[in-house]
Image (cartoon, one colour):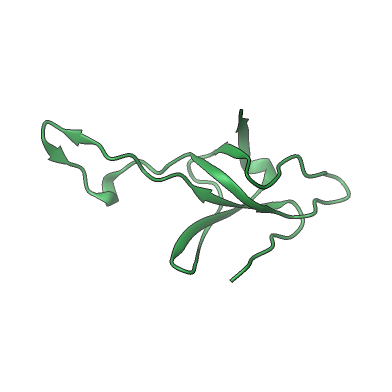
Amino acid sequence: MKIQPLADRVLIKPAAAEEKTVGGIIIPDTAKEKPLKGSVIAVGNGTKDEEMVLKAEDTVLYGKYSGTEVELDGEKYLIMRQSDVLAILQ
């Protein structure tokens, strides 16, 4: 399935959560920190007031509670406004 964000929205694939152990105890998935880094998969066309700065394949940082989670073909993605993205990683 293919998805095309509208207006100033972007589709982001979050980076995998890092495995952490504390003194030999493995922390379960539910207690892991939500990743704040991801890869842009698709972008909308922008609006008349805001042009799209992001492009596909950019690696970005975003806020902890930004976006809406969607699941496509068993993969989890986030759809959010471009203004919710904090930075582009070079």
